[in-house]
Length: 208
Image (cartoon, rainbow, N blue to C red; front, top):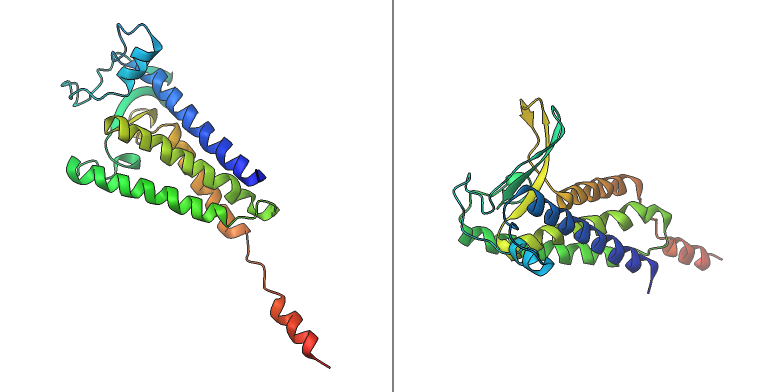
């Protein structure tokens, strides 16, 4: 298997596993969804199910606690996002939102795969795209798994400034997408198309 596809599979799968594992820990430790569930199978079943909203700020899983990592700057707190990144489109009706996200997610997968196939995998100038595209793909699939399983994405990373200003809650998949997009922006500036030397060589060969 070519090296570039090893990178694609390893990074994409790694992001998905890390994303889903951290969400499992968050549901287990910060909500009551897994209380009374002894086996791993029962816990996974509880994690990938979506009971009706329970009246706790409209959340499907009842929060039990949150963790203050840095009291004035950062905490871990369970949150649900039925929309896109940073809560975009969360106010759309479920009948409109679900098909839209299915189309966007599948379209993103196809687009990323298309551009990744065009990479040679051996050009050092491609390194930003070589690693950035799998990060975006892994993040997109991580959140898509959430939407397929329960109709909303689990967020839990909350950065704030003394509770006066806050960045929208996010998760590992969101972070991977942001890093990957940043690397693709760098790639757009660093990598330049190599000029086609074939016409010039043909012209030189035709000269007497």
